[in-house]
Length: 334
Image (cartoon, rainbow, N blue to C red; front, side):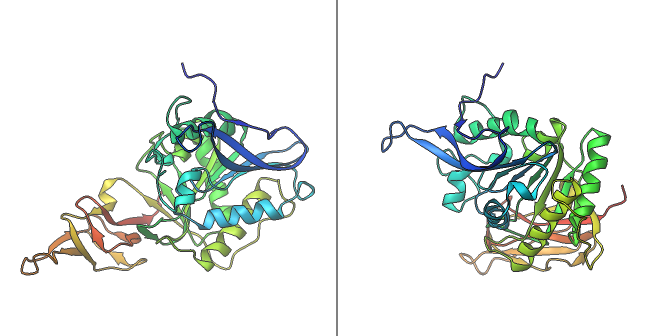
């Protein structure tokens, strides 16, 4: 049986008021024998009420969530809320500082590391702390993602389907209240290595998201995230007032299994045939791989297996065999 976490903090999760501090993850290396990886965390509490746990930097090269949560840490005060808000703006801190999807220390992908290990490498230790300490405190959890360096997304907020009908129902209500133009229900995986599935396994209402990508920062996505986060906290009764209505109706969509994903068949230079938001048919060409080291060789095509809307496409031009080059979403028929 796993033991207690080895991560420590001066933060008191039950204390009233606003605290901004660090989680300390011991990391002994040549340049720092008794060193810690210091992971910023904020806790804002005002009396009894629900707890919202907001996290970004699960992948270090996904920036909209990190920016919005840093702004919230500076602007949100205890007098503004009822209940508690826990904010973790750079959950995989080494990856965030490196601008990379995975940690440069242990190559750990935090979003494939749950439920973690208190005696594992830094990434698995952090996953264990989130899973064993922070998830049990939360009534709602939002893990804010973007496409990262390698992918571009139509911005959306999302939920994963769980085995708990009550969690699914409350998650769907939060999904709609967020107010994004597109909302996705992930139906293809219940893999507990993902933060969202791990939190639902703990009984927490959970949202995910993909707010853009390409390793850049979208102004429109930032505005959507800020409005949506306020709507979520109002929906939970943590912030006063009603959620802000949006000028557009949310399009509810779903992503299924591997049949919705297209992969590069060969290493080379990928030429896409579609743009984000395009509607495609089953069998339609997605793109083709060129071979600049052997330009006389004919390019190798790849095709969509399903019909749907292109919700995601690869950002980088160079591909290796097995790289995802696009995936689809469909109108949700739940």
